[in-house]
Amino acid sequence: MVDFNKDAKDLLEYIGGPDNISAVSHCATRMRFVLNDPAAANIKKIEDIPAVKGTFTQAGQFQVIIGNEVPQFYNEFAKVSGKEGVSKDEAKAAAKQNQNVVQRAMAVLAEIFTPLIPAIVVGGLILGFRNVLEGINFANGTIVSNSQFWTGVNDFLWLIGEAIFHFLPVGITWSITKKMGTTQILGIVLGITLVSPQLLNAYGVAGAEEIPFWDFGAFTINKIGYQAQVIPAMLAGFLLAYLEIWLRKWVPQYISMIVVPLLALVPTVIVAHTVLGPIGWTIGQWVSEVVYAGLTGDFRWLFGLFFGTLYSPLVITGLHHMSNAIDLQLIADFGGTNLWPMIALSNIAQGSAVMAIIFLHRGNEKEEQVSIPAAISCYLGVTEPAMFGINIKYIYPFVAAMIGSGIAGLVATTFNVMANSIGVGGIPGFLSIQTDSMAMFFVCMAIAIVVPFLLTIVFDKKQLFAPKGDIEDAPVIQTQK
Image (cartoon, rainbow, N blue to C red; front, side, top):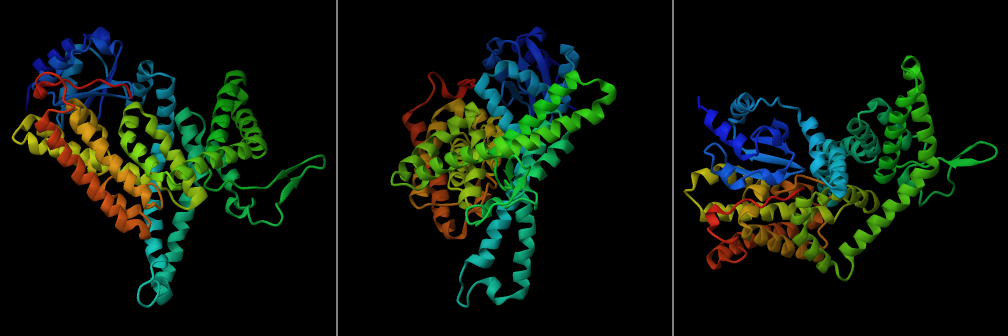
């Protein structure tokens, strides 16, 4: 068993001592610190510690990459520092002291949508498979037109697809109450009131001859559902959460179980159907129409070039989390999203730049402990280890990935590549692409793989975009996310 005592003591010293640590925790491979003064950490000396494989800052947390032995290292660090660990949620809460207002807002969006992503990915795969079954004409027609079995499969799969996308507001309102620490079942009930079968389905509003309504004599309220609508669900969810929090401050404890749920849920449902729902629907349509116009208009190639190039910097700032809401709104309004394919291509481009670094620095065993897992995770849709651990450290692979992603985005928007839904944001992303866009998406994937790889090698040879000094010893650029 490796003795981490000296390395733990060195990390404690170079990180600024115990007084500089506001909170500490660990995940599968990294130590996570919330520092009172991030500038007090000596990055160069920390990265020279034998047990340390790299560092980066994300979401207000200074993260030190240790590897699979991080539990043992963490235990030794706790002994020498006297610091008790906290949970990941507590660390995130403490990390807010190092975030500005925009970063905090993006972190909230991330915490709302992250629990929903597995279901949305499944839904995207199901929609893609159903498109193959019913949308591709082979020699004798579509698969469903020639097989009762596959017709049954196609119909059955829509049970799951409808549950994920049409009833998405239930997941959003639940996730908000979970994040806010309020009563989750009330969030679920609120979401159901937005998509209840009693309401006119949102997809049928445009063609409806008559909209049903509740008649209160002096006034009426339209019975309109908000299936697949993101912003109305978010507005309603936050109103419910804040109203419950406010009520719990004023309602006596002995009657709170009866009074708080009633006075939180009923007014929220009323306001959701009279004010927040219509406003949120309008805002959502404006956002999706503007983005869709940019993605499909005469200058869509320029939109694709800029978005593809700038998506990775958006990840650094945390602003990329807004793309989830936009993607889901595009899916609700237009039956697919042109935005998400560029996100998948950007992830692939970052992974390809890391692959070039692996090739250039082959034999560097310490770096390969970071770069190889980072490249794999990047190709599977998780870019932060690659970006913060390798690409931003050397700068030029990050620039190469941005250029490759921009070119791939240009081609994707030029040929109107569309996805059914959000999917696995890397090479497996092709599974979520609509069938008529599949071939061109593979072309874009090839661009995102080849261009960053070759440009990284060229930039390395020409010493372009490289940090000053010895490139092998270049420190990680510390960037708040």
